[in-house]
Every structure is written in structure tokens, then in C-alpha cells.
Length: 266
Image (cartoon, rainbow, N blue to C red; front, side, top):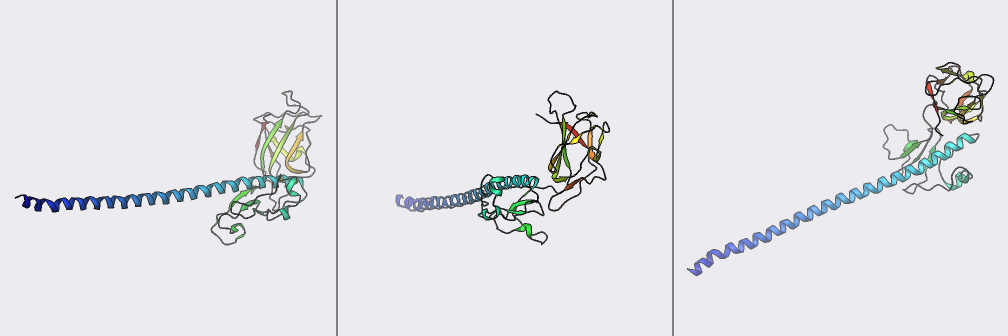
């Protein structure tokens, strides 16, 4: 009887051992698949993180270059037209408008400039200059910063209490800011229209340079200003020709926007 029991029980025990071994092997295979999947996701996420970090670095560099070009264009007689930011091309631009020589982009390529479009850019990871490509819908991974808006217009108008007496009177001024560098010739208060009230600039005179992004009117005798901060608006007259866009591709001054005169925060 014992022998019979052993014969009957033996195979079942062996089967359980085999089943246990088989189950452990399946578990191991599942674990390997899970770990491999997690590793692939981690590697992909890390790659995306590195790419985002490089794009951010390129954007910071491009903002610095754009700032330098804007400064150059407001001070020099001709617009900045160098195509590639390399030391041998930039010359005295380094030191005068850039504190130090510009770096290459994170992919080892010099930053580039398109003066007609008013942009600075990196050709991105693929190294292809898509900004000079004429094919429509051409795929692009370029990183682009625009330093000149597409239109020429007044961005804001600020009142400056120059004599700090908390009154709007002679000696104070307003600063008119433009979106693009402008050449200003024989500008007068008659080139602008004010509302609330009309003729609010009095006998103000121009007190700024002939080229730049800012036009300043200094309130001077005999007619005092009558502007009201937060109520008086100003816009160019339709026939104005004393303020001209001096960008590589000049645009007409937008004349129908009424800009509210606000007080500058000191």
C-alpha cells in the first residue's frame, strides 16, 4: 500500500516543482521586460531633457545677440548686416555691443543673422539653415528670435516728471517709443494729434537724437502742456513723413492707433 501511495504521490510533487520553476522563469521574463521598458522610457526622457536644455541655452544666447543688434541699429549709420556670428566677421562689434565673443550654439554651429527678416537664429540639431530655404512647409528645427517686429508702430508713450515737482509743466517731457529704429527729421508737435484734450502738447520741442527708437518732446514756453495722465491719447497724423523706418526693409508708420499717455514709473 505504501509503495502504491508513493507511486501515486511522487509525480504530483515533481509536477509542483516543475510548475514552481516554470512560474519563476515567467516572472523573471516579465520583470526583464518591465525593467527594459522603464529604461527605454528613462533614456528617452533624459534625451528630451537634454534637448530642452540646449534649446533654452540657444534662446538665451540669441536674446543677447538680438539686444546687441538693436543697440547697434539705433546708434550706427547703417543696419547690422553680418550673416554669421564668428569672431573674424564681427570685429569691433565685440567689445562695443557684445561684452565677449559669441559662443557657438549647443550643436557646435555659429549663430546666424538674417537682416531682411530681422531675426537671429540657430540652425538647430539637424544643422540645416531653414530660414534661407524657399520651399513651402520645409521642415525646420531652427531656434529663431525676432529682434525687429514685422510692423512699424508706436509701442507706448510715457510722461516723465523731469523736475520732480509732481506737476505737468515746463521742463517735463513725453517719450514716444517705436517698434523699429527710426530716422527723425524736422519733427514737430504738429506731426501728432492728441485727444482728451486736443493740442495737449502745447509748444513742446523735440529733445531727442535724429535716429533711434525713442522720440522725446520737451514741454517748453510759451504754451504749457495740458495732458491728463491716463486719459490723453496721441497718434501720428496721416500725412506724417518726418519719421521714417530705417530698418533693412522699411515699413510705413502705423497711424491710426491712439496710444494712451501713461506716467513712467520712477
